[in-house]
Length: 240
Image (cartoon, rainbow, N blue to C red; front, side, top):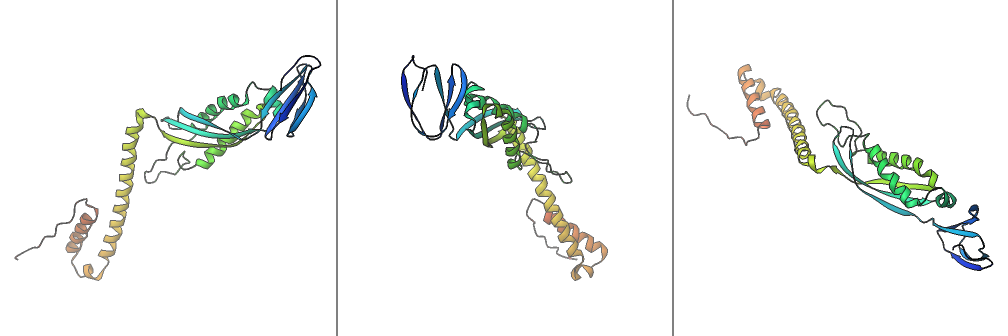
């Protein structure tokens, strides 16, 4: 549909998931929402077609920093649809471009409020992270983006993180850190288990019959075997 010469009659077909915003001499005077075939006089009238179908937008390779200042590469997927054709046609130049411009800014702002991952040291309180609170992060991004695109007559249906990783310049260092954290946590668990086993052994009838010196030496050897990384080598004392 478009503006034509005087006294010319045009027809147009309106499909499902589509709307036509009508302007008369540049002024808004109505929106056609129902699908069908229309005949009308288009003198001084302009019809702007707006799709109301659900659309998706890929927000790719946004470089930002998390709450700890670590550089990240983040991408996301936005699902959205036009719910107010008049605002989409008149208040912004292009709804899709408007959403595409606002989404990366929202993604950076929300990601900057969370650390990529939490510290795994014993005694450190757990905090929400980008890796563990994906639903919370997605909800905050969707709500914030909705506030920004209301002017365009757009409804945000979802805003999900797609990929999340450290930036290349620190990725190798962070991988070593993750491995170190995992090793520390594993060793702490092994030590805690070994102490429990040694305590039970010291309270057993077999060790109770020993002298204090013998019992201490046996518990020490047991801890070495349980905590040590090498396999135990049995030794036999020969002679008196």
